[in-house]
Amino acid sequence: MTRRTRKRIAILISGRGSNMAALIAAAIDPAFPAEIVGVVSNRADARGLEIAKTHNIPIKVISSRDYDGREAHDAAIHEAITGFKAEIVCLAGYMRLLTPDFVKKWKGRMINIHPALLPSFRGLDTHARALASGVRIHGCTVHFVTPEMDEGPIIAQAAVPVLTDDTEETLGERVLKIEHRLYPLALRLVVEGRVRMSDGVAVFSDVEDERRDLAIVSPGERRS
Ligand code: GRF
Image (tube, rainbow, N blue to C red; front, side):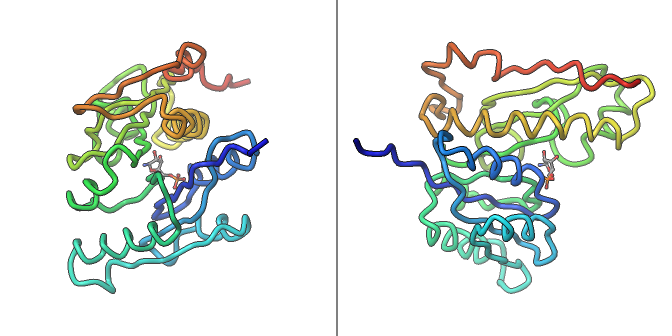
């Protein structure tokens, strides 16, 4: 009997790499339909690189300072991930805007996790902005990447409560925990072709069993 081949995933990071670690942890299970074949960071000091190394995952640092302009930098990243023979790209805290040309090359095959319930709070400082706006529910979103920042078709979302005594840190921690649950679930569906991007929307098939995973509503942790 032939073993089902696992899809090859490259992850782009810039820092801590906790979402990357969650994807690596999910892919350790041989039943997971994908393997992490390489991690690229635009920063040599990204903490996530050490985590990737401990799992023997090939890493590459591609600093924008070594390239003349965004196009050249993104071309180097493209070369690195095609060198890994990656079929799908996961952005996991990758903090640089990608050029339209790069995004086009990975159209429908590149996903991102954003720490807010899109389309609310695109961009940075999402937890502080959520607190300042007074929303009582916050969360995270996994979406296909399109040239416009944080605007691609939504694959899955997870919501957590905003507590009255939350700080940016406590709220951020609560969201991060659920990010680590959501990202592997979303990646699985992309890898299995059960969600794809078509005409600018996410189209789902055979997801009856995962309907609830695509929309996680978490009570958050209880404080004693
Ligand atoms: C996460 O909150 C993610 O949603 C956002 O950047 C942060 C990265 O954290 N895109 P980490 O590097 O995965 O720990």
